[in-house]
Length: 46
Image (cartoon, rainbow, N blue to C red):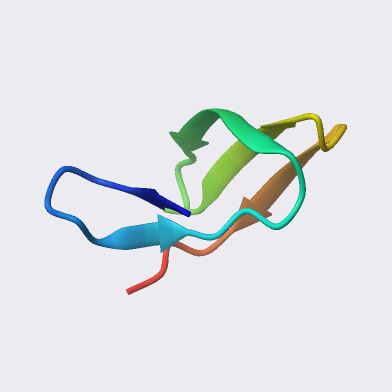
């Protein structure tokens, strides 16, 4: 689970550890998983 500075949860990681995040032109978040061997795309939790 990673939070912005205001404490809001934006994404929950179930495999590995986050090793980089970015937001694409559609407002979706991409997360690289260190130790999880993958990159995932999803909606930012509101």
